[in-house]
Amino acid sequence: MATMSLLAAVPHTSCSVDDERDLCCDPVEGLYMDYKYLYNGSDIFPQYIAGLDHFLFDSEGNFIEKVPPGRNLQLQELHLEPGEYTMVTVGNAGEPVSMEGHEEGGLEAFRLRVIPQADRDVLGQREFRAGELYGGFCRFTVTGAALQRFLTEMSNIHCQLDLRVEWEYVAPVGDFTFRLENVPSHYNMDYARMWTAVGYNFPLDHGLRDSYETVSAQSHQTVETTFVTLRYSNECVPVLTVIGPDGEAITPRLDLERAFQTWGWVPDRDPVQHYRIIIEIKRNGTVVLRPWLDTEVLDWVLGEIF
Image (cartoon, rainbow, N blue to C red; front, side, top):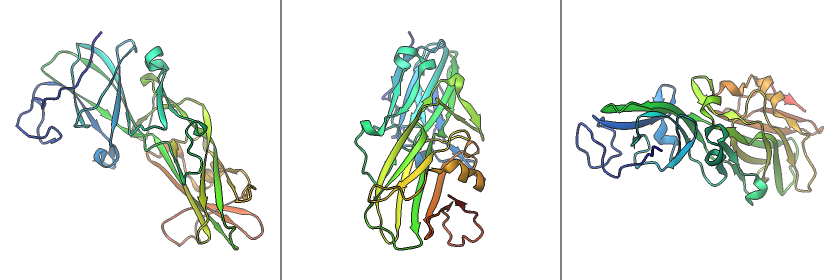
């Protein structure tokens, strides 16, 4: 079975440098995988991706090995026999995320899973973060030519939801719980099942859902929190409930899909999903949602009343 490894030595290049992370020189021989994260025409990989995990599969989809990244995350030297391969790469995967199924079932069974909150003892943290995750897929053929370079283009595969609660009256004092339900919790990482939108390749939502909670204290008439989860889709936008210090809900179950439709937010069209919502508690008991904008000029913003 073919194997892949990384060389500690500096790759063969057309000039000499002391640090292999210097990208001024192009290799003149060897086998390489380039990594980029393109947004608005620029490669912003260094600003957002701090680590990579590579999973290598053969032409039949059998798992070969998990490949450790090189010092230069964006230019990886490979050592492979001629043949067809698939590389699946995940950026910034930390403890909340596990990779499952690939060792036993190969590429077809490969799943990325956000470990359930109940298994991780994170309740009470200000924010819930599955991680600022990025993903990339590349199917490539090694021919044995003197120089071959392949490209994996990374995509943003997480969603950040910022929430802020405001009151028309004096707000209760204490800790508030934010409960987010119906959140995607698994990706299918099979190359054959990825889907393409807005110029990026995304892993397929596996269809499993989970719920997450955060706890934040009221301060100066507001409460704020953040959830970082897997991406939403047009078919799956979460439901939110805010619970007061006394354990009673201060909002109904807020169907965020309804709000997204009102505001024209279409998750499948957003290469970067970063949503910000204000939840306003009215004196008459109604709850109004509106986009949380950086400007205070909000009279034109259509609110969603619950």
